[in-house]
Amino acid sequence: MTVALVDCNGFYAACEKVFRPDLEHRPVVVLSNNDGCIVAMSREARNLGIPRGIPLFKARNLLDRENVAVFSSNYALYADLSRRVMDLLRSRIPLAEVYSIDEAFLQLDHLPEAPLPLCRRLRSDIRRGIGLPTSIGVAPTKVLAKIAAGRAKRLPGGLFALGEPAAGAESGLGEADVAAVLAETPVTGVWGIASGLAGRLKEKGIGSALELRDADDAWVKRHLTLTGLRIVWELRGIPSIALDDAPPAKKGIMSSRSFGRPVAELNELLEAVGDYTARAAAKLRAQGSLCRHIDIWLTTDRFRPGEPRYSGGTAVSLDDASDYLPDLVAAARRGLRSVFREGYRYKKVAVFLSGIEPRSGRQTGLFDDSDPRKDALSRVAASLRERFGPEALGCVPRRPGSDWDMRRECLSPRYTTSWTDLATARIG
DNA sequence: TCTGGGGTCCTAGGACCC
DNA sequence: TCTGGGGTCCTAGGACCC
View 1 (tube, protein in one colour):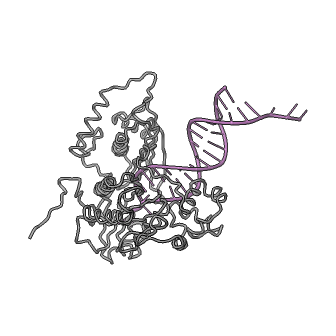
View 2 (tube, rainbow, N blue to C red):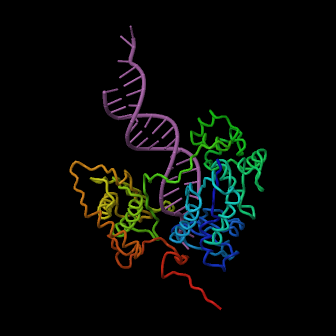
View 3 (cartoon, rainbow, N blue to C red):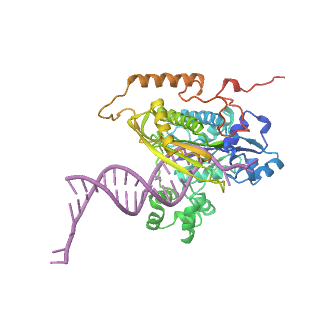
């Protein structure tokens, strides 16, 4: 098998640069929701030694000193550019698995074009057509392709091949070189091995990807479970993690956000819960599913010592599996009222949809009272939102002046998804 | 002042069934 | 004295990913 992993470099930061050529060589960082942590960086920012995940307030001085461009998360922009990249890949490669917002695995066997020239062309077309830089790793398995892509990041050509499939190709490597690359790769650089497992591995004398590859199967199975064993096999070049171009429907859908400020009022929490339920329900409908349960959690700020702390959650079950927003919102609000306690300043509310099942093949209750008009209404509402924007129609009114939303003080325009935010060009 | 928001898979153990 | 065996389903918890 020949697998490629296409990875967009510093994706969020790169998206911010697409419509800002003036930022070409400047360090750029992108913040998490609520402008809390640094979650993505351009290469220039990484070279300054900024750690990923650091809270913004701890990095402030460094960012100012180095003239770093700082952006709030502009998820509408990233999601749209991601879709363009994935559409391009899927239009060229019959079997492509979109693994995350910025990565896709491609199955490169039995294609008319050889893997490396094909990947080189994909890179340049994504760069020219969409404006995003990528790295591509090519290898016989997904785990090896991840390692190869990591290497590719450091090469000017952005392309690196590991193992058999590349043999004969100009930048390919032989078997011995695979071992050399694995020996240089720390075990935490292997997809699926993080610091938690690395400790256990260290005790066994396993520190590199090569040592993990050559570990004893029975020991691996016992200590790292079947998941770990599959990783080891993949390191040996034996495909053990399938490429899946139609990922299964989600089994749970979560919508949760920290507030921009502490929120104590039930009324404001009810607004937020309505808003999050609408987001989750949109995802539910998009994958053609219904849900049976809604979980609500709310919590105070765990980083504020001295303040009274409380967190609570509850599950609300629906009579019939549903995707009908007004019913879901009513149930979610019921759940919130039952866990809400007066006298706390809340930091976060979460809505989690579970008991998910496909809309087709739906199980109805004994006294099924589902109303066909609900489905028709939902379809109309969805098409109106698609045409006029997500705020065009909802069943969750916001009181004027409500301001519990997350902070996004450095938000860039939604260049590609909002008519009012289109980039303008000056000629001459 | 200030610390993200989603998801996945696997295993063990208990309840329950015949 | 002696107390089956095999299966499913669910949940909690632990690990990981971007």
